[in-house]
Image (cartoon, rainbow, N blue to C red; front, side, top):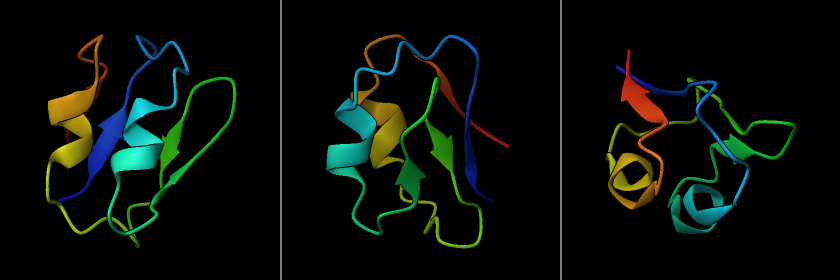
Length: 55
């Protein structure tokens, strides 16, 4: 089950640099590609706003 970035994202980039599979892309808020996400949870662990949830 992939992770999802919610509207609480402030686009700080912390999650993108920590993602081991490169599943996170930049935008107004960041987006996780569910087909690439390996469900490791690293992004959620480093998110300073708690914007990343498991779907």
